[in-house]
Image (tube, rainbow, N blue to C red; front, side, top):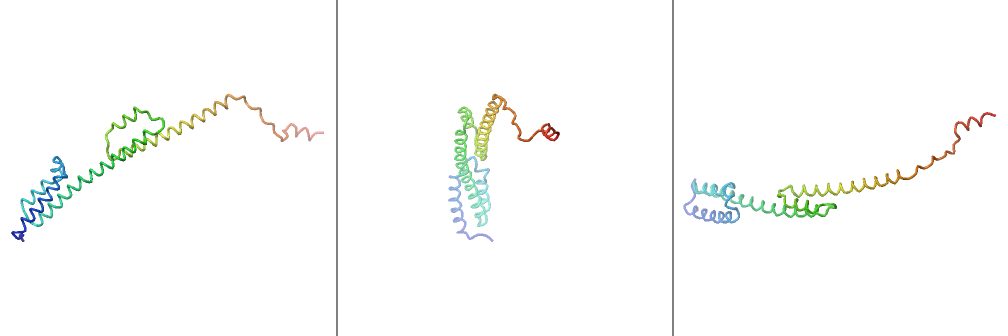
Length: 166
């Protein structure tokens, strides 16, 4: 079943508006991989309501994918900045190491890795302070003169035997 003759120009105009919007959102180097050109080619090859719906859907999906990626990239950048701040605030963090960490590339898991690093650094500092405290206590204990053995209030075996024999 073919579309009415006056329907095709309206569909083409509507698809043109959607294509303009997709072209504003999708960068030129991503249009082919996201199927923007293919969607338009398919409609031009066989114009009709079904091709219009398919092309509209594909143009919308391409624009949506780019918007979502930008949104996630912004959220990732903010999360990484918070994680970098957490690492930089960790006790014992070297400023040169913090600068080198800031220069690393950012991906979706970078914030998780930086938070884990901050937790590890905090745990390391805590363990190091515990070990230092235990070592100081042991040094004090080893430096002190040995305490005399405590005398038992219980009679020893020799005293018990001597108490029995008259």
